[in-house]
Amino acid sequence: MGGSTGEVVVGDLATINCDGLQYSPEGFAMGYFDGSKFLLAEMIDIETFPSFKDFQGPTTRVNHGELVLVTKLVGRPWKISTNNQWRPYDIFEILIGEQRCQIFRHNLKHYDRRVD
Image (cartoon, rainbow, N blue to C red):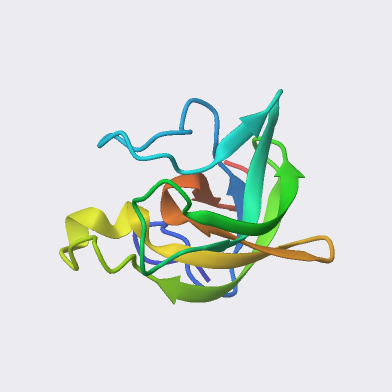
């Protein structure tokens, strides 16, 4: 589990990483906040991101550091380059309790149970 670089891969446990990361370095919205909760949509529109209506379907409210299961690599938005430097835009499906939603790699952190 976990890539050799500690990056998130399908099947990993990961934590939500949203503290100060609502926007990418390029200024694209990676999600939205409702008070202190980060809102994750059921689907991120892979065909139109970045646009004004990228996040679709019901939302799930999550906290920074919340543990999730990464279930699927959805892909990278079609308007984003396939160059590896753009990996933060990869979209994953995750499971939070019984809710499935999508999130960018930018907002996931590989969970390592080992204590240093």
